[in-house]
Amino acid sequence: MNDERSFFILLTLRMLPPFAVVLPIVSYWVFFGLADTFFALIWTYTIFSIPLTVWLIKGFVDEIPKSIDDAARVDGYSFWRMFRRILIPLLGAGLAATTALVWLFLWNEFLFALKVAGGNVVTYTAHLPQLKLGQRTLWNVFAAMGVIGSIPPIIILILFRRYIIRLYLR
Image (cartoon, rainbow, N blue to C red; front, side, top):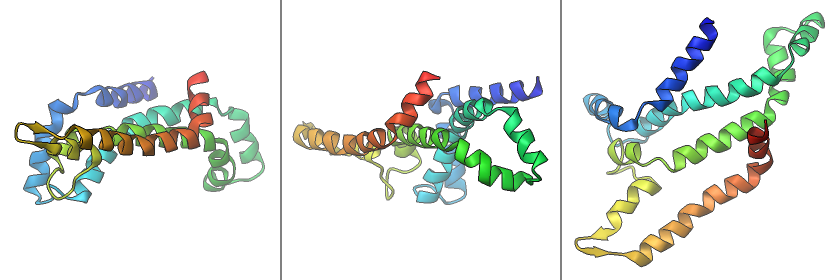
């Protein structure tokens, strides 16, 4: 029961709207003098991607039969040896699908990229609003950025398509 409750709490943290926490996070990074740094952006992205990552990996770990764990213990495997030699290869597809999906969510993230970074550290999505010059909108540059910005997600989806399809067919 306690395990289910902790996973539910973790999932509800993911459901928290970013608008509700962006001001405290920016204030935190300004207070420590780390606003508009790669460290602040990476740390913020890491914290907000943990719930999704844990939830996805949990589904793959639950698919591994308990008998495999018991057989490894009977064979004398320590926890770390069993983790490295048995669990990681069994979780390979799940790790690949989780990596691809979390990367796609972070690639499309806009609010933290604009508010936590946005000055010296500019991501693809935070750079787009800067393409408007006064009353003039540079539509040709927007179109080019859209094409260039869609190339990495397409490559990631092509490379990880069989793992992502397996994730949705479970």
